[in-house]
Length: 454
Image (cartoon, rainbow, N blue to C red; front, side):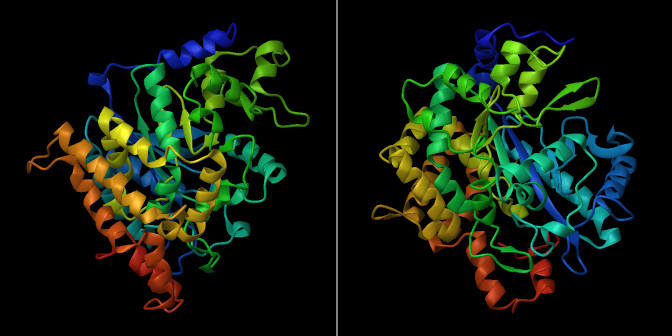
């Protein structure tokens, strides 16, 4: 059996053990992609010929991945440095390696996309540069045969109105960054959470679902507000300057548990009245007692905008077109891995109350860069944040073979924000204009194979 957790101090030490010296800091990126039929834009199913499981099998055969199976189904692929996994609605995710530079991440992502396009093109599969399934309705989505997700799917119905949409229809980009100490972790957690509304505005890219406009620039962002209040949203305590690992542990201890895993078998813990990790730690569950593996698994079921593991995870951004997929990790590396830039980013957002942060977040879900913090447009704050990140990346001097630093991954977003556009604003304009409400034109323009989608 895995090592047992004796008390709360063990859980605090768990986070302390994640600290790394600056020289060992890396950036990990997780990229979720929406896969559809190129013929009609409907969600690619998991099962069947040309479905996601079939594509995984072909990828394994052609590119030497090791299939990851559960109950006889392929649910992922393990590569030499990175892993391909599948989200509940068969969204395809690359869990990238821990890269020293964004150039490394770019090479990895480019190879991954080329492999997917090669295999998918044989079955009229399109990958869309969107943060949400544009056509297929919730009732049409196939839930993949993974026990974890079936437990969650049933539970979501009891906690919020939109959790099942979150699971099966949405796609995002996540960046994972290191910390050197408790103080450094909490400062990065505070700043990352503080800039969440700016990230939503910049990366808004889910204005179309169920075959039409949904009234939001990031409907994916709105979905998270009505998924599960016990484990989603922004954490208010991180804005307390004295907050530490113990505060995060106390929060996570009181989040209800989904399951335990014993011998590859899931034990469902969601039946009423449920059990929090604190109750589990104190009393156990039947003969089971809390282990560090249980704690690690529990932390993956917390879906706050920014969450803590043995690194910082920023989970806000909608999935993007390929040319913008590296923007989030580049921006965060520039801001969080330079002390002056970290302080400058905090200066942009430190004056807001928590209520103002929540209100601004709601605004950005609807109107993106046009939202206002008082008299200041979010567009202006986003521009400043990008410029701060560019300074940080220039100082870090990580160069590619052409002698370019990592700020090259921010240039396109900088141009977009200067023009007042996000991907969502472009999609809304095109849906009403040159796409003329035509799904086929949306798929053609948003497809990863297409040229000129910016």
